[in-house]
Length: 251
Ligand code: PGA
Image 1 (cartoon, rainbow, N blue to C red):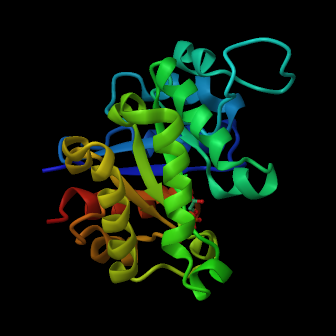
Image 2: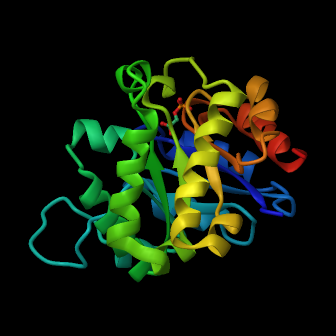
């Protein structure tokens, strides 16, 4: 059985004092049944790595450069993140795709860069509301995956986690129904299976988009939903711990 995990994307939120109090509450988490990773902004990574040391809590970054080093002002490489003690990195979050114009191919190259640095890329895919309404969900996610599978290949897949985040559900309070999530997760797993059947069965696929304590259990009960990528609710310790409990006790 695949182990569940919950991932907290802090986005551009936090501060030294509030991070410390949040981490104090999260660091005693029991990760024997479900993992936990948080993704703070770059300036706080060292603080969070230090606070999480000796606990089961893992730390990841929200983005990385596709390059290893060089004249890329403002960019951060996978090697730098790994050296700092990060284990995970988000790749291709919809806010990066929309606000920073990241293409499917660039996202795939970032996943390769993460893998080369020894990080676990959490690669995000998902459709917009207009794409869902025009019944293009599978076509859109299919091409996001095709770029990933084509550029990155099974090596990268071996260390990756995927996250299905319908853009219309991110930060909107609208959540995909458990059935809608399951349908897309099963589609993703089938596409991966076409490239690597054994990897498809062990691949963790997280759901993201307005996950809360109140809806986590029904989402995580779906057979292909292996946990959640949580934005807003990951900034509130009680709420995030409730989501983690739902993952730990999901069937
Ligand atoms: P949300 O964000 O949980 O606030 O909808 C999810 C995400 O962007 O990863």
